Length: 166
Image: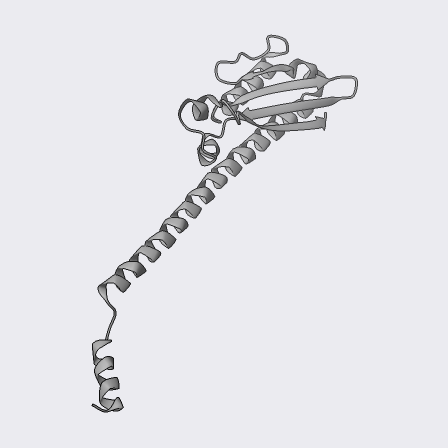
């Protein structure tokens, strides 16, 4: 048999891909797709966390604007830091102040584990507004599960604090 005939016989036997090559390609493709799915999940978790930060910032700015609008009664907006769900508005101040704080606390309570506090320093005309929340999706992303994720046993709350003049 000549070299040309032997080369032609080898080419005929090597046509196409074998079943093992196809299975290896499918496994490699599956691992890549699982990596992309994990990346998408992390992106959603980070996006949800940024939404909570934005909501906390807007809530703090809202009550700061309310305090600036009611400068004469600004001292009555003081609120100890506590969970917003079921928190009572301060009993001092006018009906409008109490209604404003009650409305604000209801909106803070929409954050998961929402808590808030308002500290006013009348000597410097400064107010510090703190809004806190528990980001359970981010905690699940770092491996906290079960009771640790729901009670916030480790990375408990995220906080947004705004200090401004009124």
